[in-house]
Length: 146
Image 1 (cartoon, one colour):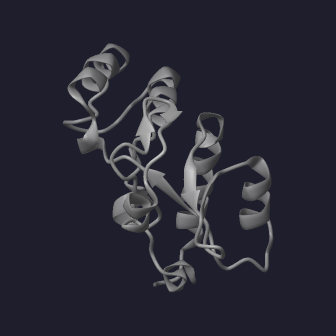
Image 2 (spheres, helix red, strand yellow):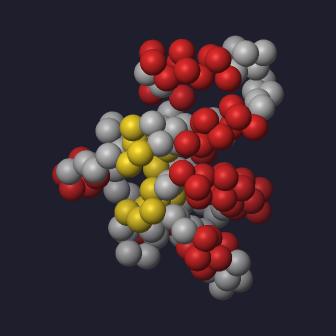
Image 3 (cartoon, one colour):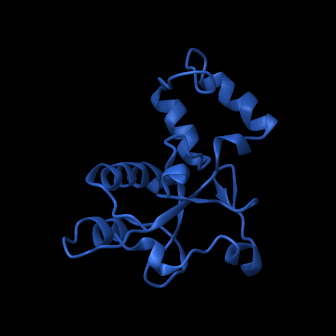
């Protein structure tokens, strides 16, 4: 895997911090395990100058938004152009996207996040999935090296 740029590290840090209140799940680089990210994890990964590996959050692609979620979101997103142009969101809009674990920053495409398996997140609640389903999303530890 290519080395993460300073900009990518900053983007990942900003994104993960915004998702902390919503129980974002990440795949840890060392244990290759799924955990709910905490403030302590942020400190351990991002503020240790010797650290060369970072957790990858499980996020939902924007395209996975259900019809019900689109209706709910459209009430918040009035005046923003999320699907047809630049995103100029309100704080409520960003909170909603974070609470529902949507990848509105393109982290999946950048290789900074993993696509959440269907059913991992339902609204702002974690829904357990089988180990087999989770195993399909795992990546090797070499993909974390920078």
